[in-house]
Length: 406
Image (cartoon, rainbow, N blue to C red; front, side, top):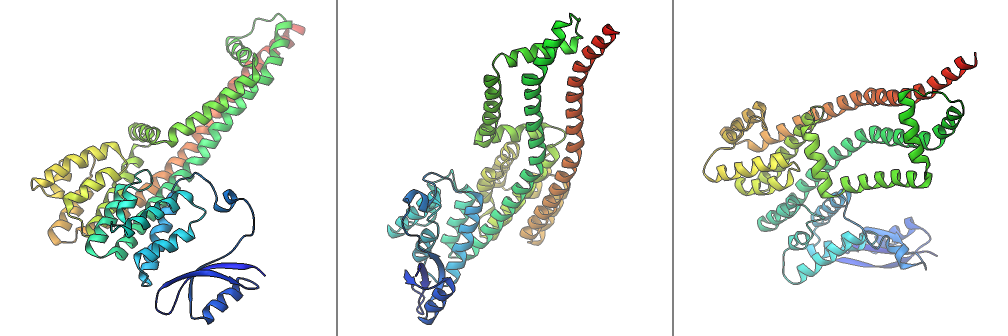
């Protein structure tokens, strides 16, 4: 009979964990309910096996989805009346297969046991948790509204995740198309063209210029086929690694913000994130100037980060938010300035910022769809030009050979 490991709440609201034997999961749930327990998690205990395979990867990272689930589960458990330390115990138990997140949660438990705030454990891992994440937690702990703060944070993280996912999904097809085209070209130059070049050499024809260029390139690649293919794979892996680390991401973002085809999308994404982040900070009770400290780090755009940092100093001197935007029309359009000005005058700044974030999220989606629609035929044209060049370089000598025979 299988054994199930459970974590549940007893009628008094205290956490309880243990093991129970039952014929299946449904029977285990019924037995625990009969004992008056409210089940939070229930999983079958695996017998034997290597500990490495049971607990998942030894090394890992905290993903965006991990952070969303963490805030969602923590808010739900606290809402059920469970104490913060017991809630962390439940999350540790439920994240056995996520070693990086489990490590942070274990540190959080030690922080609570030592009388330190929960946010201090997350603050010690800036590679996993942004200043926005830590800042909102600190505000929630200080104001006693941790549950509401976690719910706002979950919404913020989810919107960021959705936008990032849409951008990645839209760019996946062009990236795969370019990689496949590069691979096909390398294979043609390495394996196909050298054999044709040998036939051309035997015929003593004077090859056209484009054919000579491709034959020279082909001979260089064919001199060591394994090295050529390995260099192509290594270059692709190096590009993925570079653009996957923070320095590469900053360089890519800076490059995209300068290109005419993508700079509007970059601006819309930055404005949506700025407005949404500032709204959640103000909603959580963070003063405007302090909120700008967090927004400057969290906006994810170097140009906007510099402007927000400058504006923060102006706000400290008494300048209004709308006036700061008005001085920076290149970064903050008139729509943003007008809505913020109305929000400041009527005391509805949160609502104005929410309207701005929703508007620019929708605009970013439209721009993204338009870019993808434009990129697909553009890439096909580029591929057609490259393939056509190779075809002409091969067909011209064949035509010359046929003419010579005639």
